[in-house]
Amino acid sequence: RESNPADVRARDLLERAAERLPEQLASDPLGRARLMHVIGLAFSNLGDQDRGIELLSQALRLRELHAGSASAETADSLNRLGNIYRRFGRLVEAEPMLVRALQWRQANGAVDHDLADSYNNVGLLQNDLGHYVQAEETLRRSIELHRRAGGPETEQVTAPLHNLSLSLRRQGRLEEARAASMEALAIKRAAGDWSLSSVAVTLAALANIERERGELAAALAYSEESLALREQVFGRDNV
Image (tube, rainbow, N blue to C red; front, side, top):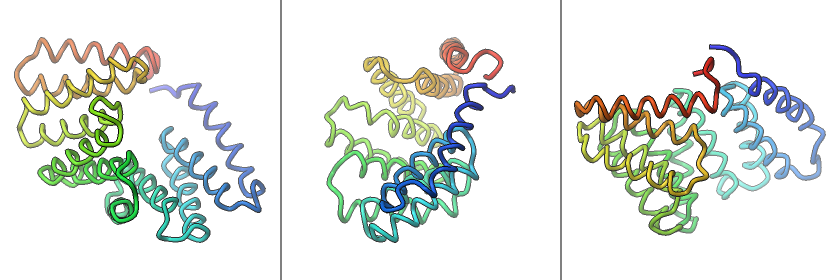
């Protein structure tokens, strides 16, 4: 697979921004932590595990020092860094961070999308650990909270709906898994402003479900649509 030129340019820009961090906002450590947090997430999203975790860890230390270990800022860092560890398969390191963030938000936060996001990330971790029944319960709670915070059709539910479909599929409950994925896809398409790559992920999940249901024509149709969207985003040589 060839390197995406856009990714290379993005990494160069991020590296330059990261190099300037030590001299920026010297009198505002929490402001510097916010910049480190954003740049670290960007590196992680480009697949640069080491650089992303380095910057997110530095942001976490600054927030713990200057905002306190029991603060909304620290909970945000724990949730994001924990999820990055999870994405790269480092589940032992991810679990205490994600659980700590969720516990703080349960005790101190409002019923909002941040609390729901913590439930979603813990549910993802439980899926990764093979605890599918627990994951289902956690992800349903995430969906409920997102809807309480943003209304029944809030776009925020698409992530836990997608993840719920994975949990249900692993339990062999294919009809329910299909329904969850279809709901996520319908919300994304109705909104019209979702990234094509996000829609492609949901289509790929549906293709897998339909294949396991024995609906091979539907599986092929979803796979082809997913591939076409990915080619639009990444180019034919990068999918």
